[in-house]
Image 1 (cartoon, chains in turn brown, green):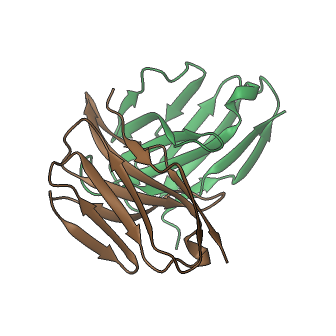
Image 2 (cartoon, one colour):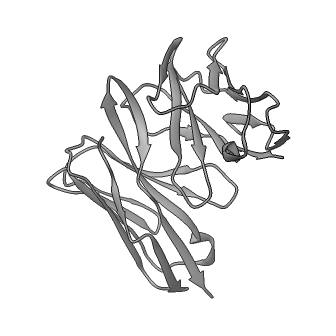
Image 3 (cartoon, helix red, strand yellow):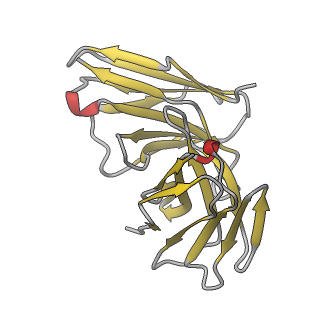
Length: 112
Length: 113
């Protein structure tokens, strides 16, 4: 099946540093979604991208839809302690019915 | 206000004893999903409803069933929980397939003893 390859799997950074993570696939997509999951909670949608080349910001978060439509990245600038969590890229896959599937996730840990 | 509500937040059940998890939504969305998430893993789709149409994932065990009696509610039934079914169960909704992201509930943490 279609697989989303997300990297890195984990990151350990100092507060105030910038963060970058990405997601790639061998398939072409029309959307890219980025979610964050806090411990013990459900994922929350951060950014949705709908057009190749699109660059979208949400506060300190910036995400881009790759021109090839096979990849996307998420950047976090000037990280703060509440950025800790797991970040997932996600895709809407069409296999008969349409469904939402996730990358493996990037676990972000911040040292104060 | 919470838009996707899962009850209970924490559920403890005995090995082999049927258990039902519930999800309700105030968004009037067409699609409702159930995911299983084990520790340090991504959410794994079990099945989803588009309105009343049920779509089961090929690798979802028969032990897992779902009901959607109306637009607002969806239930996950685990007929005979095993120790391996201990996980976080996430419900999500979306307005229509392919349109924007899905909204998730807070999840139900299931423990099997």
